[in-house]
Image 1 (cartoon, rainbow, N blue to C red):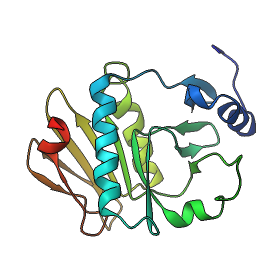
Image 2: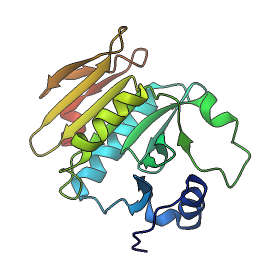
Image 3: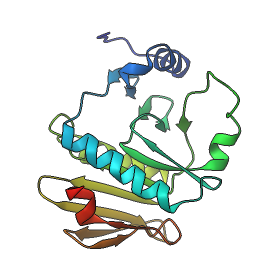
Image 4: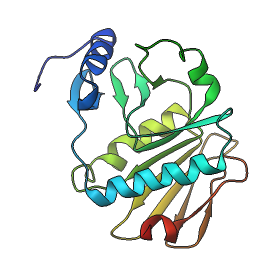
Length: 187
């Protein structure tokens, strides 16, 4: 469904629920299907989600890979590659089979993995909006360059930027969680 029609928030939610295989995002009121990703992108995203969930209590945190949405505004919803969601955000809707996974409150962890189909806009377009939402830790992984850039929210509301190319990387926003960056890329 290619469209140049802007949608209301309710219309967008109905579209996303009626066509769940399309992974609809909302960009300035315009529906946009998240494009297919490369095999490496998908492998890194899935493995990161697996590494995270294995270290987190499911009763406290849930991990989602490439389907739930970060609500930026009534005109913008993005599907991050990997997010960690406080379980309390989901409990309210657990028994609603029509609930769309949408989170307006800040998330503790958001990750985007570079892919040829989204590499041009993932960081330039999404990073300032994730920071504006107040997400606590934002990762950008570039598998072919073997780099990780991390933005961590500071007590004063600014973000500190860090860079990694290997080793064990702490996830500062989650208690006692680390990611072996080499295993993530070589897995």
